[in-house]
Image (tube, rainbow, N blue to C red; front, top):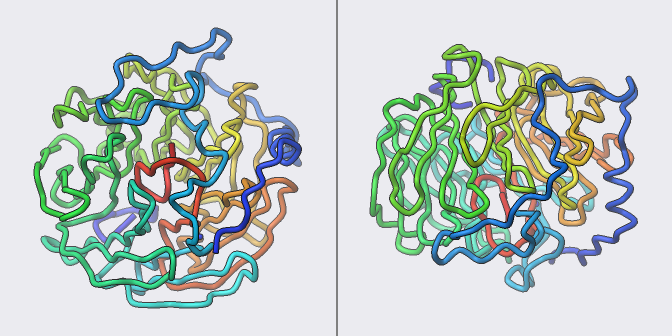
Length: 400
């Protein structure tokens, strides 16, 4: 949430994603309060999904017909030699804090190169991290960070980059120009703006994710309780989805299920996640998770979805196989979990404390708080780097 909002709204380690470790992660099926049920949730996936057809030209074919995140088990050779660090943009202090994930200490801090840094976004080719600075209005910039050294370069002028994604074919960087009500398509090498797609009916355009075939994207309209669907190749809006709560809703993060069938959408006002059919783009259900539902993160084994409930300081866990919420965990002493990502080995969830100027390192195998790390004010869209996967579609590291 940025200044336009009217509401309080990581040398890489050796990656050993042992089956035994992943089994432990996926086996935590009960919270302290017992198993949590669902409410009008997405339909169980008893019938195997069909593999995606007619892929977006140039998009790398999925490694599995039933798991869009199948590549997220091991690090790409492209990230060899890159440092294992956590990068935190501090929106209210216009800085970036850098954390050593081994010591849980802030080892560096530098100016963001602009005002109101919102997210640290890995590039499609995994070679650069970009801090999105979306102020001043009508201007803005991207601050490139070299992940091999952890040092920043010179800011790149880019208009209003609240958030940023990359099309699955790697052709465009999609700058989410929230104030301009526009999705702007840039050459990710020269940073020349090539196309602009006006989204006047999507107030507060915010987060997005892509269908399994890469052909379409679904974006949240934070200030109008709606979702926008656009054709990636044609760069045009194809429809709007009105969420059940209507214009009073506040949709946030969006994430495609591993089987490619369902979009999960966190809503801070509805205090849960809506589900939308990824083929028909129709509403299919709602799952109450907690107050201020905000961020969505698929575990490294694709078995579960972590949901941050910012207002109540908790994390809910949705199990895809069980088709149910299986845990709710509260940060000891309270907190405001917002945005982040999961470590390469799948064991630690790094998440910003938006209202507390801190970062939480959460052990999601044993479910305990490893560290609470003070950073700058307004800690927001942090990324832990490097992450497993072949390419990044943006945000804080949505890897495929």
